[in-house]
Image 1 (cartoon, rainbow, N blue to C red):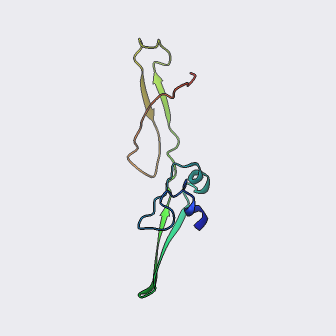
Image 2: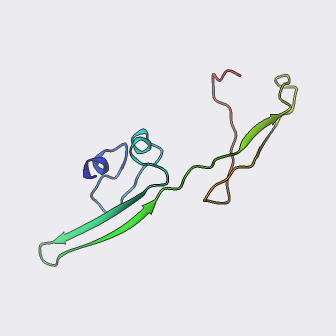
Length: 110
């Protein structure tokens, strides 16, 4: 909707201008857009001297990867002494290849 496009958290560039940017990482985007659903974005342009026109494009949001597991090896060890590896397997997705990244959050409890 126009109100959604006007929300800076959803579309930092807003509904007017030469570019449309949708921030898919924002909380508003995650609450408003459903993975696997299709959305139509319509652009309408008008000029007092040249008339008006419109074009539309349909976007389908991919479903997130599913079905896989990730596990550290070894499952226990000593900080700064034990070398750990992380392996992931059996993930399925409509979008391939999959890309993995690993990290630790500050303050995480294990």
